[in-house]
Image (cartoon, rainbow, N blue to C red; front, side, top):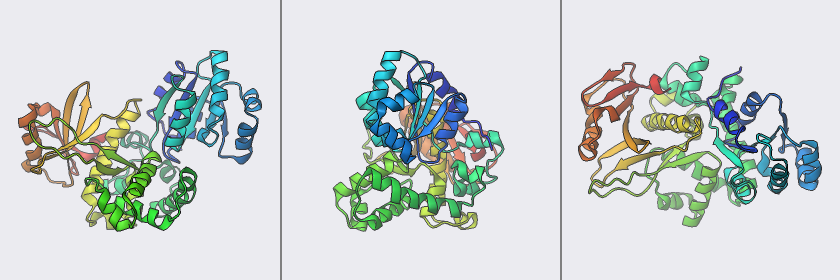
Length: 384
């Protein structure tokens, strides 16, 4: 199944302006497939392969002589020393679009790029399928519960794999392979516990002290392990908005997962039916919606400008999107029947910020779109 990726146009555009383009993202998000589709005439080689990795590490000049240009190099972070040789070669050649680099360990890859390719590479991030991409391809799940449960990893749809089979294997591979490569973690059982505890805290303010107590680890260890999860595209943090409007605001970020299907697996949710009555269903719906705003920005080559707002008295806005310096506020409601109360928080925020109704939107589980005097009401299917 060939599904068009929104990021392809930006990837091809940057290859005309930089000698390198670096494509990061979680494992199995479709980076190699996208690179091959965008550049069908390029050769493709993976440093995941031990022979290729040893060739690149032990004989970098021979590697470059073999692949002098128009090459896609997957999992390039496996041989970070190669990048300095590629940089010298590209500087000498002076051509654009010489190499497309992909990697799934953002910390290691970006560290190597900062040392060798700063200013010479375009940087893009590819997450799993977006709502819009699935909708255009005709594979969008029929209900919000199904979309939450299935998640958006390409293999789920390409190979019609049951999420209950796919995600446990993905989690096992990630913990036993990627984590060990990124950092020596002596107690994997406690690390696994931390990952599951994070899934149970989706949409909540980050409380590191609580995580440390429940896992039986130190605060610095919590910091280190959360960084690993963030750098490998398992979790991310939504930061608070600091327009205080003369009110005290919370300073802690909120925790979310890049894929709700993965989060469901960690929560031991094994079916859509189970999800429909789960206590975290609303939080997972909120997570799915915010993910779409993240993907929308990244798929256009932009850094997401997203935040949330909450004051000390409990007033809150789930999502604030900044576009060209203008803030648009979104409330995410896990109800299918419209209520005027949906706009209560938005109206309070608008009273402080002066935001017009055109900058206030409620996204809900229903099917009907409405334009009210308080703002827009949008159904979940209109996320694309």
